[in-house]
Every structure is written in C-alpha cells, then in structure tokens.
Image (cartoon, rainbow, N blue to C red; front, side, top):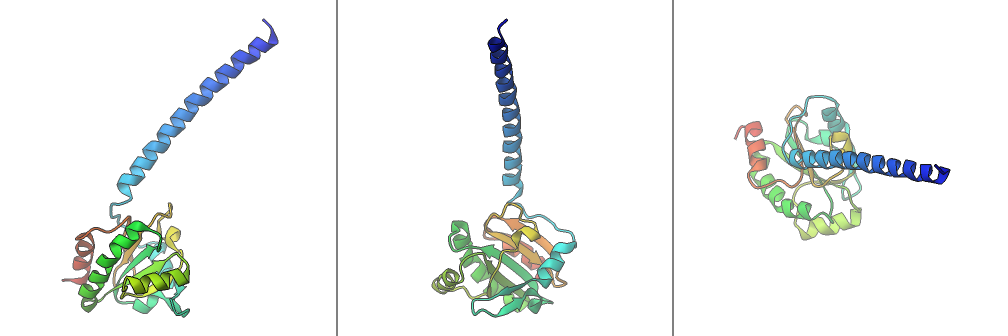
Length: 186
C-alpha cells in the first residue's frame, strides 16, 4: 500500500478520534455549565474559612476617594453586593436593595454595593438610581467564591463577620428577606 494512503487512513483515524474526544469534552463542558447554571443562583452555605477574613480585612475606595474597610460595619449583618453599571440584572435588583436597606437598617443590617466599574460612571449611575447605601469600588468577587466573575454577586456576613450566604445572580423579592430576617431576629 502506498505511504500516502496509510497517511490518509491514519489522518482519518486521528480526526475521528479527535472528534470523539471533542464531543466528550464538549458534553462534559455542557454538563458542567448546566450544573453551574442550576447551582449558581441557589444560595450556598459557606464555612467560616478564610473568605470571612478576606471580607473583614478588605479595604476599598468609596465614591469620594476615601479608603474604607468593611470592618467599619463590624457587629452588623453585612450584605455586600458586587455589581456594574453595564449589568442589566444588577440594575434590576438595585431598587430591591435600596428598599431592603430602608427596612433592615434599624435591625442592624447594612447593605454595601461594591462596583467593579469606572468611578465616574458609578457616581453618575448611583445618583440617577438614588442609591442610599454605601458604594465602594473594587473587584474582590473571585476571592469570595465567585470563580466565574458573574454579576451580580452577593455575599452576606453575620454580626460576627462570618460569611453565611452567597448568591450568584440577581436577588428576587423575598430571597433577601428570607436570609436577613432570621439573622436580624425580625
């Protein structure tokens, strides 16, 4: 048999094997994406590991350029919501967060928005949306369990500063209340 035919058959076998491997990897990728899609929006319990310490020790500039630490709100239930001005689901949940802050501040809850965006855009946006809670600028999500970098991303720390909940995706009405009421004792 001529060498060119052997190469042709060998190439065909490699292509077929390559397609099979690609299909297997693609199927595994789709399964992983589906699992992430289903599990991501669910609220997940966190251990008291290093994530709570990262959150407590983190410092961020606010919209006035002052450096702020999340430990300023020590002793309060802290809801940190990572967002961006260009994120449609983030825009949809901001009124929910504004209303939740108004309702739960007397119970020792503070909501802090952490924007991963340009300071000038965030300042303009927060004024137009009448955001009443503190806004800081940073990108700390990946260190707090958001490996995909998806937005919005919310973490909740109890009064001791331990991360107790996290959520990837927009909060729905009632979800935040279901988290905060037991922690706040309301």
